[in-house]
Image (tube, rainbow, N blue to C red; front, side, top):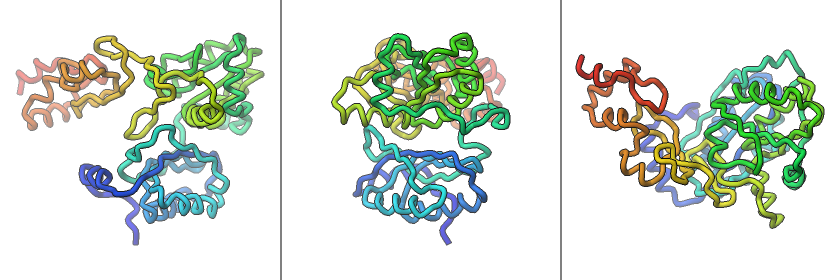
Length: 343
């Protein structure tokens, strides 16, 4: 029987990925659909995808499925046929990566969740199926150029800071839950304006547009397929992209360039940069933008405290991790020197 969870060390898995002699295709999809037996569906799906040597991160809930995946290109046809045979996945719209080196994932995760998107909203309080108008990439492209149109980025701050649509409203929110409340409150007196929502692949706009309409916004529109589909279609049409910079993606690639412009800034020195990294201190792991100069200067860390921490003996690091001394901000560790003196 096929194991329903991966238990191989990640370093071994990464090496296996690097040694693969074939190409992979990165893709994503989602669908809101009531799944009668989520656990059974999850287990069967894992076994089928594992058989095709698929990698990725997939969330399954009673309300549907949300997937980001890496499929061996030679197995892509079989993968699509698998989707077509499933009552829940048939006719699934697929978004393919704009830039794809085949190294987006190194293992398969299929996780059962309460929801496929954490938004903090009460689904019973409004009709989640009463969504905004789906716009094609070309329709969105044309409307986004109009001065009277309100374009809103429904992604998090760390996503929009490296790329966004021209003249878009990009809220300073760290989570979708925060953002949807921020934007509906900020524009509550502009409910007659034409609103254009966009996100990475479209899933967040499905929930957001329904909530906007529930609150009385009258002309709510959303970019069908998100930035990923927009980039593909605009390129095919030979048009100048209105999206500038990179598109943040939730896999090992971290981002993919849409128009090769750099709109972000290094969080440490302020110079132009758009490469997200995680702090080299695994106890911190803060996601931030760091240029090559600062990476070398700061030993790939986000702060002096983290630089000091990774130089400590491993036993000391383990002790401090148990104490949870990291405060979750770029300021690093609170009272690090004082704690060290007490060891």
